[in-house]
Image (cartoon, rainbow over the protein chains, first blue to last red):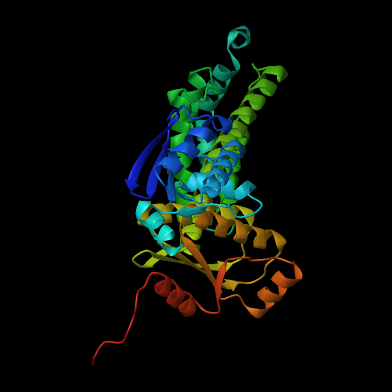
Length: 117
Length: 290
């Protein structure tokens, strides 16, 4: 998929690694492909890897919220992992309420979140 | 008279100093003991030695004709001399004021030591005095800059040390961090604490963070906002924050401020907070057989 790399980790869980060409300002362009992928592979948990992101601005946060909405429509849980301290700090500065999606330290912790649900 | 007219101010001063070196040395010897008032920071011999060394360096700088050039070796040598001198004074419990007093003493000795020279005009005398004042003022300023720079460096180092010791983030168990906050939380301190805490969560891969606020004296809306911001950032990193030790007055203040801690886990004491963290991680701590 353009702008991101998807790796199926198990029968119901997928890892999404955003690429440099991902355009968070135009989230609609990815919607159809993502929904198709989630439905086709019957994905129940999507792990979004933020390890390459030093900073999350409002546009990128909106993209994550948009992705969360897409996942929810498909009954898929979204967990963001590997958030950098600088990104967490920056995000906490402008966030008015907690994010709708879950966050975890790493893939293992994310899987634990999926199991809790 | 005609020869003196051709000499520069620096050369005039050198000539006059050479002619009157005896007077100046005598003044230093007689007045040296009073250079520091009642404090005997330097002995009379030391004052004489320092003063003779100073005279040599002073003449050296006059020879360069560019006495305000801070990069010249002569200027650097004089600054180095004054640095050593001020260090010596401060080691013996003296202050910067006393060092400046010593510089004034040297300047006074030089001015008093200069004898009237009929070959020099009033304008030349004025130039010589102006030049001496300029050199001494520049030197004093330079020494003060160095002194203030070092003082600032020391203050910064102490502040950094204080900050390090006031935010001891400890990994008390695998995956469990504790952070006791003591004193008051302001914006800059919160930023530093948060930065260190988030870094620690990343490096230690901690899943639980117990923040103990027993030592927080007062809380206002800004501090409460900072605390909530810290909780959010910890959660975003994927760790679970637990606040412990909210004292009655802090709880009352939070209620009055209408601060909603929302889904933040709170416990009364640090030990309760640790128990909660262990429970969360499925860790069971039990007494061993004695």
